[in-house]
Image (cartoon, rainbow, N blue to C red; front, side):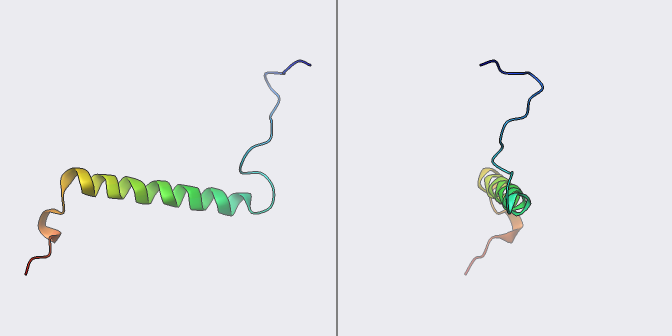
Length: 50
């Protein structure tokens, strides 16, 4: 059995609901990036103090 370079195999995003799954994945990546920036830089002027 040979693998063709141009052949596309099955992907995680194919099938029913593949687009919704991809959108949710990208949303989670964006949220994780935002939390990483907040962790790295601190809250700044948005800190809550008593």
